Length: 298
Image 1 (cartoon, rainbow, N blue to C red):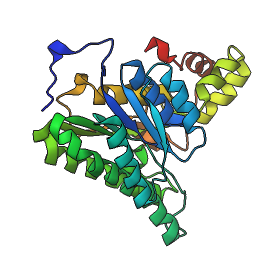
Image 2 (image 1 turned 90 degrees about the horizontal axis):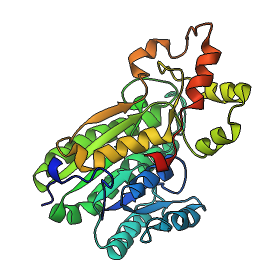
Image 3 (image 1 turned 135 degrees about the horizontal axis):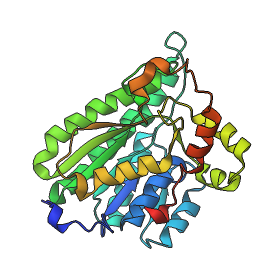
């Protein structure tokens, strides 16, 4: 059983020698999660349907030669099982699984169709369950960590997200069950509930905008999700939280559901009707100008 203690943590390389799986890791939030894990010594396996997958893996291999991409449709049981088998064969064992995959087919409850609801569950909930089930046998020998990327929609109603919220709320409970069942094996399972997060290539977009005040304010307003500092979070905010939860820094944390939302849920009553102060434009400018951090600085 792999038990880490604070005395043996390498704070510069928290994941040295670890192998991590990041679902939907070719782009968006998953890509940034993988970048941060690699920065701290992990080898990352990513999957997804995005054609950028192989190019992303090639980019990762510059820093971690063992990284690779496997095309996988997470809604398909057989494809998901094939992915797990291939990873176990090629990687030998897996220490970390980040269940980042998630789709949101936004519908009000009265309009949602069975097929759309079921598809959302297949990708988000069943995909997560299959990843955990598939990598548990190896982790039972050495210990390991699961992190599941859920959403604040799983704990507070924000329409129209009936299928998405249902799947992610189930993941919160599923993670707690995993934590309770496998704690004796040194396996931890935790959930991150992101709020409004800029993902994809937003870091590059903000870098290109630079000091253009008007463009930065306009772009930043799309992230006005109720955070006290007026800005949506960066993908790195989720990546850094994931790093904490899969490393020895959180060795005594399991079964947790952690909000990374800038306080959105705590002021949900202001979500749709906010009164911005007169100097809000200046606040937007200062906050968004400094929001994003290069992975080299992490």
